[in-house]
Amino acid sequence: MGAEKKWLFTLFVAALVSLLLLLLITSLSSFSSPRPFPSVVRHGAHYPPAFAYYISGGRGDGNRILRLLLAVYHPRNRYLLHLSADAVDEERHRLVAAVMAVPAIRAFGNVDVVGKPDRLTYMGSSNIATTLRAAAILLKMDGGWNWFIPLSALDYPLISQDDLSHVFSSVSRDLNFIDHTSDLGWKDLSTQVSRVQDSKVSSHCSGPSLILSQEESNFSCYREAENARCFQSIHRQGSPWVILSRSFLEYCVLGWDNLPRMLLMYFTNVVLSQEGYFHSVICNSPGFMNTTVNSDLRYMIWDNPPKMQPNFLNISDFDQMVHSGAAFARQFHKNDPVLNMVDEKILKRGRYRVSPGAWCSGRKNWLMDPCSQWGDVNVLKPGPQVKKFEESITSLLDDWKSQTNQCK
Image 1: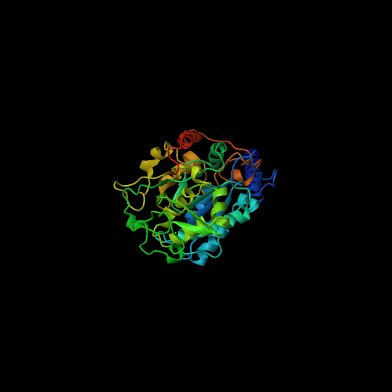
Image 2 (image 1 turned 60 degrees about the horizontal axis):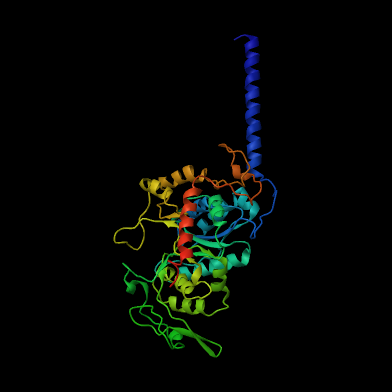
C-alpha cells in the first residue's frame, strides 16, 4: 500500500472513530441526564384525566411488575407497586432500584413501592384490605388523579396511555367501570359467602333482609344517630378487576357514611370478597348506584363452564385481543411471546423502556430511549388502536344512559 493510500485510510478510520464517539457521548448524555421539566403536570376539567395504578404481585413477580409498570407508565399518572410479604427483601430492593433507573420516573417521582407489604391470598379478604389501603395511600399522596385501576402482575395493557386518556376525556369522571350482577349463575353461592355470620354486625340490625347467602341474613341495616336507616338489596358479585372513580373511593375510604364500613365487616367473612365488596357497596349507595358502567374493560377467555381463573392467553389469542376493544387483558405466563407482540405492534415499546407517548421528545434509536427526554406531558397523541377502544366505550355509555345495566 502506498504512502498516500495509507494516509487516506488512517484519516478515514480516525474520522469514523470520532463520529462513533460523538454519537455515543450524545446518546449517553441524553440517557443519563433527562431534560428539565419544560412544563408541569396539570390536572383539572380542562386537561386530560389521570389514573392511579395499584400494581400487585407475589414472590418472584418483581420483573413482571416492572414490565407492567413500564407498559402503563405516563408522567401524569400515579403508581403504587406492592410486592407481597412472601417476597424476599432482596427482590423488593431490586424492584426499587430498577424503577429508579428509569429517567422519567426518577424525574417525575410518580412511582412508589410499598415498604411494609401485606400478605395476599386470593381466597380471603386480605385483597380488599390491601386494595383499600392502596387507595388510601394514593388519595393522600396525589390530589390530581381521576380513576383508580388495580392490576396484578398477570395483567397487560392493550392500548397506550395516550389512547386511554384520550377516550376517557369524554367520559364523566364520576363513572365507575365495574362488572356486577345479582345472578350468581354458574358460581355456587356457598363458594362466595362464608357460613360464619358476624354477630357484631347482625346484632344491630332489624327490618328488611339483605340477601347475602343461602341462609337468610339479618344484616339489613344500621343505625345512624337515633334514626334507623335501612337498605334492602341482593348480594352483588362480579369481576374483581375494576376502574373506580376518585369520588367513589373517597366515599369508601374517608368514611362519612357507615355503609362501606359495615359491609367491610361483613365481607371479612366472605371467601371471595374482592368479587363482591365494591359491587355491593356501590349498588346499595344512593349517591353512586347510578354511576355504574357494567364492564371491567378486561379481555379474558373462560372455560365452559368457567373455572375460578380465566385461561392463560398466548399468541393464538393476539388478533382477538386486538379487536376486542378492551383496555387490558389477563392472564399471561411470565414473558410469554404474546407480550412481545403487544409491545411491538400496539405499545411500540422497546425492552426495558416505558411506552412512548406524545410527551416523549427524544429520537428513537437502539442507543437512546425516546422517553429519556420529554416535552409537554399534558398533550396526547392517540394511536390506531384507539378506534376499537373508543367504539367499545361508546357502546357501554349508550347502555349506561339507557340504564339497562345499572344497579336495580
